[in-house]
Image (cartoon, rainbow, N blue to C red):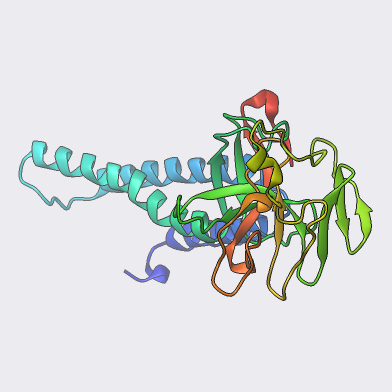
Amino acid sequence: MLVRDHPGAKRWFGVLFVLLILSLSFVSLPSLVPAMLVLLPVSLALQIASWVSAFRAARRSDRTFFCSAPPRFVVAGLLVLIAIFAPLQYLFWPLKAYVVEAFITSTASMSPTLVPGDRFLVHKLRAFQRFDIVLIAASDPRAPGDQYVRRIVGFPGETIEIKNGGVNVNGQLIMPPKGAGPYVRPVSPFASARDVKLNGNEGNPITLGPDEYFFLGDNSPIAGDSRYWDWSVDGHQPGTLPRSHIKGVATWIYFPPVRWRRL
């Protein structure tokens, strides 16, 4: 049946079109809170309205697909389950892959900014700047496929040296934001560990190449960050990652409620 043949079809088409435009507009916002507060209730209301409309249309129809009631109820139940779960899977997969994804903090390497148990959102379309918390795909052969969140502190072409609790960028000291650092070398009882020259640490500055970025954890004494990476991505020096390994910017802690805030 064509849209013009059904008196209510145009109305539903208009509602869906407006919802689509509204969804696209919220994706472009720097904050995802308006989308969560508006789109979720609107989507739920639209889903319920569509079920009610379908039920009323079926009651008025004189067509039957099965001779007895039980098969109709079984098929109806299956269709309801498909309507609930299948669209969510297909709709949220591209959203998760290309727009925003939720993660759970599992270690204290970014404490106190992110503590174990924090649930936070990573916005994959947002541009990043120095000291933003970003999601990175590491290439450590000992933990293939692992992803971490760290602060991005060094950009291509810069010389990074960590000393005096901050980050020296091309010889200029830049102090970390509140909650990050101070950046210190961990105290180790092992002489061999103390003698290792860490990437970008005081006395061992690192000059980043054309597509190389440098990362630090907020909980400096225990964070496994660029300073300790003894592995490297092809064509890049240890302690750095290329732009393609930066997957997005951490924007919000959304759970638990007492921790709800913008990063």
